[in-house]
Image (tube, rainbow, N blue to C red; front, top):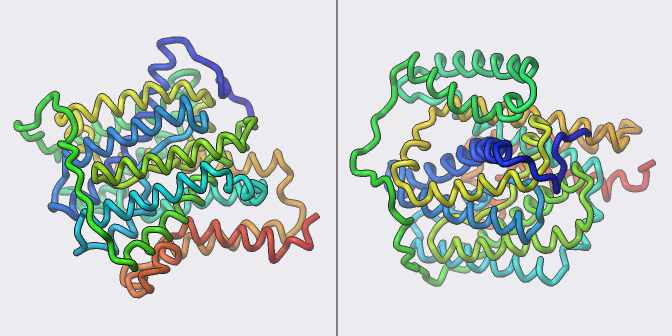
Length: 424
């Protein structure tokens, strides 16, 4: 696969800033979505202070990963897999949740730092990596569906029509545009899509006049408590899923870019993820993880330089210091966010197919089955009603209720157990 800018390339000053804005445009919606969910849980409205702390933590971890960790162009964001444990722990003291996140981060950092994860590297064959890339897109489908059919003063049907029309325009622009305009298309989707939405429907909600233009994130008051054993076990299982996610993300991007020293990248990357979760628990926010959606952005823009993410990380840190800016980015219409995710996820699926083609990952029908069944399992689990997942035992809910994790476990089982003897 051809990239205009390789892993260690450094675009000129102007281009690196624009590419940084593009990565920022992709990263922000993920933080806002998770932050708003947790804000609703805590108070029924957007929690600006929580979002500030979350932006600070994500920006800090992303910067450290780029400079000292895996050194790959990977988006860092809040770990949605931990949301399952948090949701299952409603009614428990927030201090107990924070402690559970800290314990999980300690375990993850120790296991990764000791080098034990290097033995898992051989599990990630081209077919496994392809499934991981596809699963991100398929298991995000419920989130995308909720974003584009939201009832926000505009009827869900109208929002759906708007999203479909905007999506067609976006892919037309992808075909027509060239150079930097095409590379920064996610940024223009966010800006022009939001303006179009507000002009057409007039649903913009004015920002609160009490929001300060400049204010440091939270008070960082440490709130800890001893969690119940079942609660701690639930979080540790979630961290198992998080480890699979993190490892899969690093391996997927590393394979796409044919990066060297992958053992060292994995060790450093996951260790920093563990430390990031420790710090997150201390300041009372959900922990970070490396996202597998980065190949979609790389494939769509032709930009694989890790240095272009540094302005995005710095931008997150600056945003964390401005409640007014946080309130503004929180007002991006959900259908526009959904359109961005559709574009990026489609590009990621294309990257998965190209990766499989380059590595000749399909030689027999069995190889197709290895890919097909995990995708179906992951998609079905992702669309399970909350009433069904709520009936699962608390201890195994983080695994059985997570489509991405179930899909990854399924492909590993099929690839290395069921069809191992027939490979080749």
